[in-house]
Length: 262
Image (cartoon, rainbow, N blue to C red):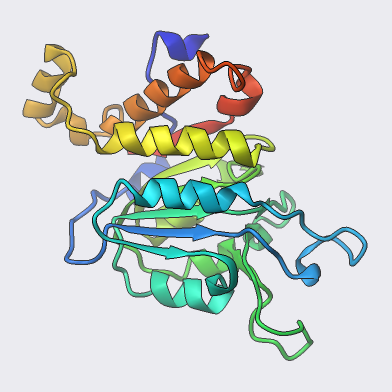
């Protein structure tokens, strides 16, 4: 596999580079992790086809939070569109992680979004629809090093000539994220929980064991440029572990996730 020899990072287009501001550390908590595990029937395509439960997302966010001294974790009934928006608007997190369903509309990319819960029955007068949509993400003002969209198809969207894909990743760049991790097809919640735990472990570790060339590049400042950085290397290490995993070695489990941005 190509990933066995290279760290791979994506940039959607040249103009998108103007959206990739460097992260400036603040005083807030390190992590906001949201696990969408149970969903209101209204969020499905029809009452007969509700969104499936994702029990492994609870394991995923708990394992990720164990790598941080400070974190905010939303699970079960704590998850709602209003609560998530309120926390995001505080502009207070270095890492933001969503483990839930992704719903993509390639014809109307502004309607693509992440499935959250809603409190009470959805009516015509409801202010929330249980989805954090791209149109709403564009209106956020984040100072975030990385947003991880651990859901199905979150890297898809409308393909525009010269601009690449217009989807949720572009919305988070505009909102102020430096790096966005997305998926290219449907993913499995159990294998994803394992992959994400290893990804954060590698991304947050000290880099003492990297080769001297990488250390030299960091010393001269190239680590802060788009082609370099620890996150792509961390994703590669996590995928290499998956390749050697007795259950999750097939590419369907690890290949969909890519690092986009810085």
